[in-house]
Structure formats: C-alpha cells, structure tokens
Amino acid sequence: MNTFLDFISSISWWMWMLIVLALVAIRDIFLQRKHTISHNFPVIGHFRYILERIGPELRQYLVANNREELPFNRIERGWIYASAKKENNYEGFGTDRDIYSHHHIFINNAMMPYKIEKDHPNAVDKTFLPCAKVIGAYNKRKKPFRPASVINVSAMSFGSLSAKAVESLNKGVHIAGAYHNTGEGGLSPYHCNGGDVMFHFGTGYFGVRDSDGNFSMEKLVQLVNDNPHVKAIEIKLSQGAKPGKGGVLPGAKITEEIARIRHVEVGKDVLSPPNHSAFSNVPEMVDFIEAIAEATGLPVGIKAAIGKLDQWEELADIMKTKGHGPDFITVDGGEGGTGAAPPSFADHVSLPWVYGFSDLYKLFQRKGLSERIVFIGSGKLGFPAKAAMAFAMGVDCINVAREAMMSIGCIQAQICHTNHCPSGVATQSKWLQSGIDVTLKSHRLAQYFKTFRKEFIEITHSAGYEHPCQFKMSDIDVNVDDHNLSKELDLTYHYEKTPVPFKSMQDLKDCIYLGGQYKNQNT
Image (tube, rainbow, N blue to C red):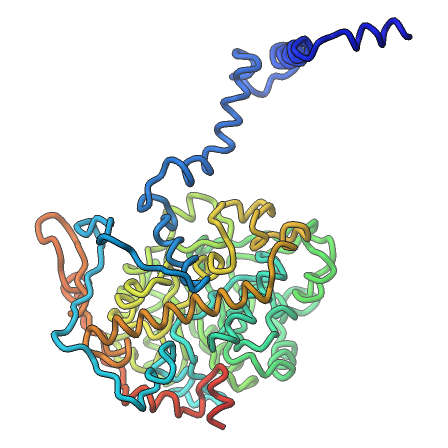
C-alpha cells in the first residue's frame, strides 16, 4: 500500500494532466457515440462545444457593436439601465444610429414648442402623463378606469417570473402610478403591493378555474371583490410570442404556492389549450365579455396578436349593431416574447406590431368604432420615440414587458425558458432570485417609467402638443425604401388617426376615475 501511495505521489502534475487527457481521448473515441466531432477530434473537439456554449455571451459583450444586437441592442439596454438608475442617459457627439435605415423614425418638431404655464400639472410633476381615454366609459361600466400612466407593465405571470421580480414590478408601478398586468398565471400575493392591477387570463383560466379547468364566474367575482386594486380584466386570445399555440406547464414546476394561486394540482402537468372553452366564436366571446363586465362592474378587454382580419371584422360588425363589446383591445406584436416559443412561431406567425396595429385600427376606424375603444400597444414600444410613433398611429397606452424586466436587472441572457436566469428575474430558483433587492428594484422600475414619461412629454411639447394623444400621423416620418426615403405615417399606412377628445392635462388630473396614487388625492 505504501509503495502504491509513493508511486502516486511521485507522479508530477503535468503527468496527471496527460493521464486525464488520455482518459478523455479514450472516452471520446471508444465509449461515446453521440458526437462525431469529439470522436474524430478527441480532446480538442470539446473546445468547439465550449465556444458554442459561451458564444452568445462573447458576441454580446465583445463582438457585436452598439446597434446590431436583437431583440434589444446595447444602446437601447443602456438607456433603460441608466434611466432606471437615474444616471446620465444622454449621448455625446451626435447619434451613431444609421438615420437612413429602414423604419427609422423622425418626429417633426414645431417651430414654437408647447409652453407650460406655472400652474400646469407638468410644472408641478414633470412625469405626470395619464391616458387621455377612460377605459369602460363608452359602455357605461360601473367602475370605469383611467390609467394614470401611459406606460404600464405588460402581461407576465408569476411562475414565468420569480416572486421577487413580480413583487418589484408591483411596488414599482405603485410608486410610478402605473398599472401591472398579471399575465395568465393568476393573481399572486406579489401582485398585491399597492399598484393598480389589470387581471389577465387565457385559455387555462388560472386563478378563476373550476376543478375541471373551465372558467368560473363565481371565482372571478370573488377575486375582484377581495382585491379592489384590480381595475380591469383582460382576456387573452393570443400573444405575440406564439399566437394560436397552447402550452404545457410541467408538473415538476408546480409548487404548492403556484398550485394555490393557479387553482391546479401540485405535481400534475397543466394544459393551456390553443382555444377557449368559455366561448367558441365571436358572438359568444362578446356575450362572455358582457357577462363578466356585468358581474364584476369592471372594464373588460381582449389581447391578441394580429393576423387574419375576417373575425375582427365580424367583431366590429357586432359592436356596431349591438352597441357593446370590449372596452379595450391590446395589440401584441409578433416580435413580442418574454414567453418561450418555438422559433417557427416566434419568427413567422402573426404580424409585427406596426403592420398588425395599423391593419386593425383601420378596420375599426372604417366601422366608426375607433373613438369608443381604448387601444393598448405592446411590442418593443418602451422608448419615447417609438411611443410617439405608436400614439400617432392611434394608441392610447403602451404596455412593456422586456423593457420592464431590464429595468429591474434583466441582462438579456435569453435563457428565460431554462429556469436558469442569471439575474433572478425569470426563474423559480430561490438562490438566483435571492440577489434581487425588492426595494431597490421597485424604485428602478418606477424611475424608468418616470424618465420615459418625462422624455415623452418633452418630445410631445417639442412637436407643439400638450399630450401625446394629439400626435397626428403627419407628425411622424419613417424611412420606407431607397426611392422615397421617408414618408409621413399617413402616407405609409394609408389612414389618418381619428382625433382623440382632449381638453387639458388638468382635466385629466381632475378625473374621478384616475388611477394610481392620484385618485386618493382627488377624492
């Protein structure tokens, strides 16, 4: 035994390295059959797989330039991070963006900008920017709602996001006076920290389902009665990441807490089918919307990614004939995607936001319905210039998902679907999410929203307007092709936005239906 130990101890470190490499080579050549590269090139073939694994990080930090990354480039991410931290988010020495590139946005400024008087709401609060429309007003809902912020948190479920991420977002919207969309994972305790909430459900009816997985009106009414911070209800028809596709929540991911919130069984796979069981056609959907609005008193809307328009035309005809229907429509772009999706869906199914929204808006405008609907845009619109374009096209509010995630620490690692999010935002790992300081991150979300609104207001004033709802399509140019380099939006998308009724910012502030912390100040 001593002789063997002496022999082992006599082997130098470099000999041990050779022995290990030899064992790896033997394993590569004779024992494994999965990888041709490592079989044909033992040992060194492994470096190929190592580089492939860390390739995204190398490109993100060392290779890609400031403007070429997708879905959000370094400049865009940097602006969100700096805005959230209240740091300098300015650029020096002029833009490095190719201003002649396709779809680049130009905002036509006025010779004389809008002047703020001393008693103007924005002289008191430079970030005050509520929605110009009241959700549910046209259909005379019992509890109409005017969002106190034109930028809000889009649908992201607890389960998809970590508990600390959801709590940070909700506390952040409370500080910023915005609303928080729950996503289809149900209303969790982490959504109940003071922020206004838009309760969202899809085909799985999580949180409002019976034992058979069908929609339960009784549970929805109970949820609304128990949670007065729920201000509106959104029914998901489809989402930008994977429109028309259902999903499975594996039983291994269903903890006791998630099971309790979603009203499902612990450890049992749960199916979210592509279709709703509560309705099967457009007339039934309209009746379903009206039944929910009557039972809860809240405004009710729908969310969808846009493709074919025939059923949307049917919806518009029913609304015109019957005089009721959804109070708001959230249009999700095909470029959306906090949820995991097959590349074939993420890349090719449904229209990008600008095309989908313009098609839908024109349809409802042609039917004379655009004034009675609150249009919410969702699809990489969390930047002031993009928001100006969206408002000029007819949007009344925007929802942001990935931008909100970045404001609380997301680094665009793009591994949301693996449960290994390094920033703790999109994971259920207790260790990974332990790095999230909820107090700090909630203030960063709030600061991002406030900075966004401040810059958006300044852009609006530079165009000569008091509120973004006053933007016209002729106020925005976009690059369209090499022959006619830029066109106004009305010439590009072939319609002119319906003017939004607007008196003054003070009138919005005095509204009894205004959400956020402002409502308490006015009542």
